[in-house]
Image (tube, rainbow, N blue to C red):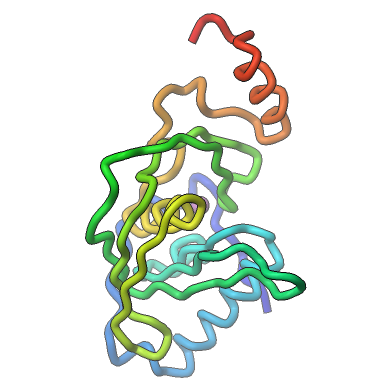
Amino acid sequence: MTLTIAQLGQPVLRRPADPVAAEAIATESFQRLVGEMFQTLSQSGGAGLAAPQVFISLRLFLAVIDAPEDDAGPEVEVFINPRIVSASPEQESDWEGCLSFPELSVLVPRHRSVRMEYTDLDGAAQALDLEGFAARVVQHEYDHLDGVLTIDRAASTRDIVKASELEAVRRARAGGAEQDR
Ligand code: NI
């Protein structure tokens, strides 16, 4: 079963999410929720999905942390009660989409690398060092747990565009055609 994805404007997307109780992780209902989030993410084609996006205000998200190898699907990790414990000073900007407002693409500056500490689906403490695209995905999903969206992080409202126009925007910027930034 796939879950309904909360769309921009739903209050759950703006609320700081609650920690997951350690004893909840092994329960059938929690494991089922994560299974349904997996299905929802894989059907959506997104790179990550946070629990508030499926109307569950808990500190939990799924994120693609590695590109697909051969015919295998992408490697997806479950992050429970995650914390960003360190981040590179260097930032990079790139265009991001969000399943809660797929009509928009937003240019978002993110740390190039981050170290995450979190609890996994077996209830074990884990740490991961991520960089590049994976670091971007976990920072995006982590923001969802604090009610923060890509549109809040845009350096300029000009960095918020219709997804359908993204290629035109990229071409214009590469060519320096957008003179008035
Ligand atoms: Ni999102």
